Length: 142
Image 1 (cartoon, rainbow, N blue to C red):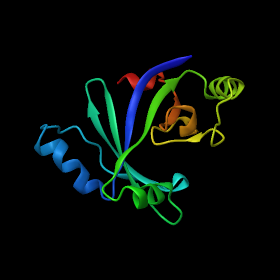
Image 2 (cartoon, rainbow, N blue to C red):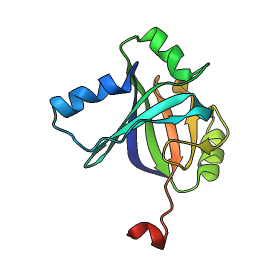
Image 3 (cartoon, rainbow, N blue to C red):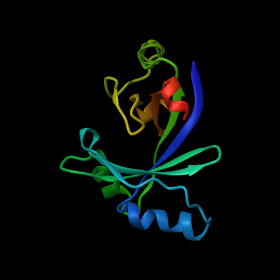
Image 4 (cartoon, helix red, strand yellow):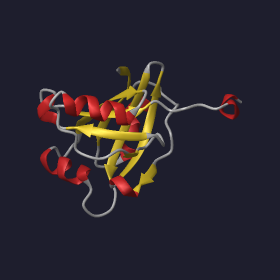
C-alpha cells in the first residue's frame, strides 16, 4: 500500500533564507521558485535531490498551521514526512480501518495531487502526509 518516500516537509519562517544553506553548503541549484497554496495556508518551495525532495514551507495568510508550528519552534524544523500511495481514498480507508486518525478529507497538495495527513500520535510524534502518486500522461513525457 505505501509507496516511496516523496519528501520531508520542513517548516521555516522564511523560504528565501532557508534555501541559502542548500545552495551555499551543498551546492544544490535545483530549487523551485516559491509558490502559494492558500487553501492550505502555506507558501512552499522544493529542494530537488536525486532520491526525493525537501519541501520548505512557510506560513501564508491567516490561520496557517505552519504559524502555530513556528510558535513552538521559531527557527523551524521537520514538520512532516510524505509517502506516495496509488489511491488516496483506498489509503484513507485502510489507515482509518487500522485505527489511525486522518486529519482531513483528501485535498489538493503542493504537487497538484490529492493528499491526507495522519495524526502524529499514530507515528511516534511524526505528522505523516500521504499523497496520491502523480498520474503522467503521454503529453507529460516531452
